[in-house]
Length: 286
Image (tube, rainbow, N blue to C red; front, side, top):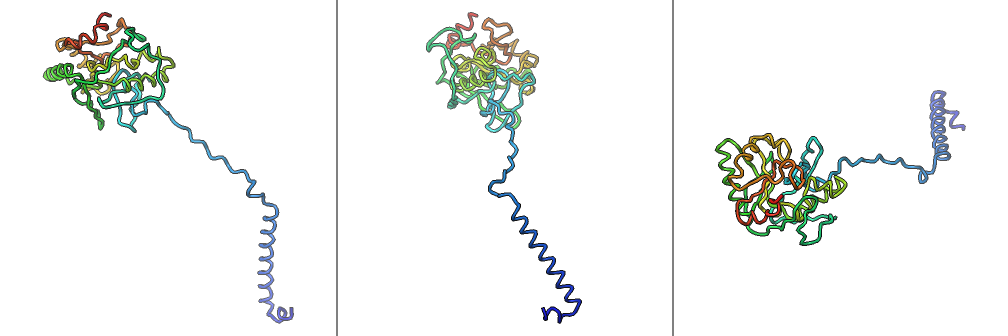
């Protein structure tokens, strides 16, 4: 204390101010420690939930387009057709493909010759398949296959059409039963029943694409009509309607067909050889 009093008044004042300030700070920390809630019992805020957008069955790497036959590079997602309809358009594969599905529809008994929601049974063609060209749109391309007899006829037809200024492009040819199963299961999930799904997609074992004699065709110059009903109004469809029969092709599902399958102006089958005609003998009776 004597030492303090020996200091000049100015120094004494500064010392008093510093001590007072330190006392206030210490008191503040003491009160905070006394009244602050236990950090272990403090309720932590719940992080916001992230909504999963548009998880679509089409994104097994396959697109949402109407009709039979197109596949997309894994990781890409083409848009839905304006109507939102998304039939089996999504399933072309090479002969080596073996898509699998976790669930199975309920097919008719093995070996049955009866139709299944209007679709007829077809065996899978495991031989005589050859390349018939590529489906190409923007940066995507895929090679398609047909039975050699259908392939030769299609390539000849394609070449002649080109001389008339019409550019026919294959969208989907041969397709395995396994691939078809994946497509049909997804359609059932979308449409709510096998009967509704079958209006847009053939059940596995019941698609003409299994035979290698059926092909979905595009107008190369009009990509916006791929596997859409608008294909009916393209130059390609007009040319096919006039000349496809000359090369052994016929429209599988015309409007109001007896099988009661949705009209598919892009879907044509080859019947121009004995093997092909025998394959579609039952269908041609409709």
